[in-house]
Length: 303
Image 1: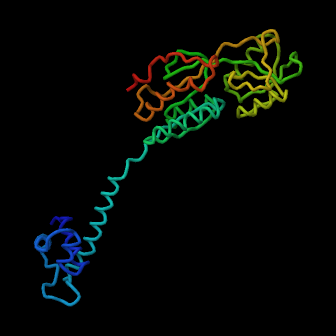
Image 2: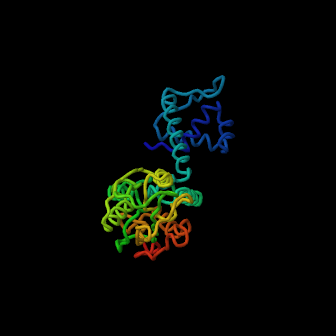
């Protein structure tokens, strides 16, 4: 036995309107068509569903009709629910991005907000952290793409940009302290590794005078004279003093900002975001601060 939804719809309409004529008006069929459909439904289920004698107040159901009525209403409701679900716009695809704790601040947020507005079919989930943490998240499949700070490398990436570094100190104060007080990010940060090795190469000692998980803390510590730091030049504040080789702090070669993925095979959402970042990261970096270098594998070539 197969229950035809059109026949069930006519059956429910007859019962709820109290007659064939009003049922025909409700579902926009002729009365004769409604009568034929009720007969087909009765033949299908093998039972009479309506009492044929005229009754005050409209049609009456047989016992079998009463049983079928509840099921008919449920089946029609489920059918309507399924149709509505299929008409609903598809859920937005999610792409997960990791960004460096100290990178670009508001400018990067504005850039990502622009991507979200331009891509309503995608949902962007962003997490910030230190580069070594972002690599772990990427390896564990917890994010799809990551912008990381690293030493210049030919390792595979979707885009890479040079990042100019500068030694900075407070506006005044002696620079010949030994050990050198440093205001730094946590262990594992490329700037911390660069700074300590560079100072050791001069034969001096160093000490960590201030550690911060965030860029604002390091910037403030330097400005207040708590310590010297090595920062990307776009993080240098007006109240910072730039240090040169003549001050005992040799110029450092550029570090690198790289856009990486766990695999060159990206799904469509990740590929869209990667292409957007590769095209726009340079626009939020200051002229000589970061010069985009061609990626080993163009994002457009990834499929």
